[in-house]
Image (cartoon, rainbow, N blue to C red; front, side, top):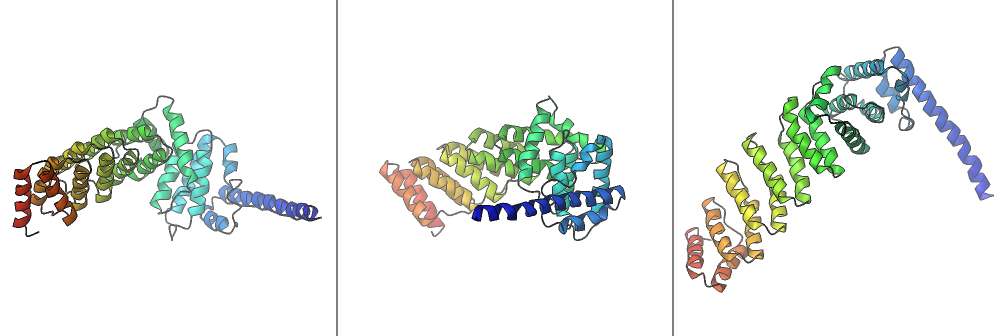
Length: 333
């Protein structure tokens, strides 16, 4: 009896769901036909979730591609002056989902993504996977990064940093790190100069994978080529990753490189590398590093100071141990 009751209670709900979804699509179709695009956000907001499945813009796939692209462009242009800017969020999400699952998602999806991000809205998490899939499909056909991005111009848009950064993030989320690097390197040819977010997102992911050489190469490029100084959080993650690989010499070289290039390196980075020296019992290196650290105005934590002096004494490096102790005395620490 319980099963029978469940059976009969579900069917009316399903019919209601399908009916409401069809009504929603018909409503969207009607305002699109009348070019009353400004009504779309309110229609979707009052749809009680029926906008999610099926997609209310799916009828656009029955139109010629040029026509559907033109309609989407007109919708996006209409949304631009709407306030608050987050009002069309559901519409942006539905349009992006529709375009990414169409037979020819790019460059239209990139244009929708750009408008979404500029409005302050955040695409749904599934967009990362759909965008990465669409991008890799195009790239598999031997299209360069810049050529795909510049296709946005054909429909009246121009690639920008925000769109590229979201693409880089999406590729990283599906473990396509090499392609994320390719996008970063190809941005400039499309007129998008990488910014701190571009490099930060990539370096964070390279650090999680402990890819030391790629981390150092990317840091070098951002500092030398574009004059960018890595954020504190990014640099701490990068040095922690290099330390975890027990490549403490390379971590010190990174700090020396950044200092020589005029970048600011925070205390946490020095302390992190010093602790790496002590972990690996590289006491001579630790002693020399401490002296350089104090020249920058940074004094290690007392526990680290004690370990450096004790470690040097334990291997008979009395001269360096005394020099380090004297340096701390001069600084009254």
